[in-house]
Image (tube, rainbow, N blue to C red; front, side):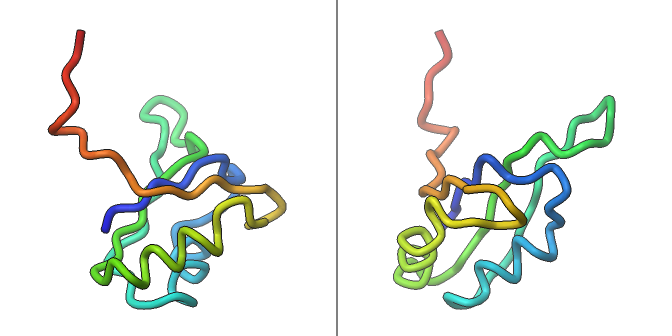
Length: 86
């Protein structure tokens, strides 16, 4: 399952994001989105977990939790391929 994580501290590393989610199961990847021009975090990222049950447990426990001094938002990522642009 692909998980969207928002309101990240700009100093949060991909390693600390990975560590937070690994408490709930196997993590395939943890990626923080960076600004191309500044190289600074945009404050959100994505975590990929292969087991949906573990992913749902991570979402339930980490949504509105504190990570590196910020209250983060965690939810299932929406599939971009199914969205239409207007």
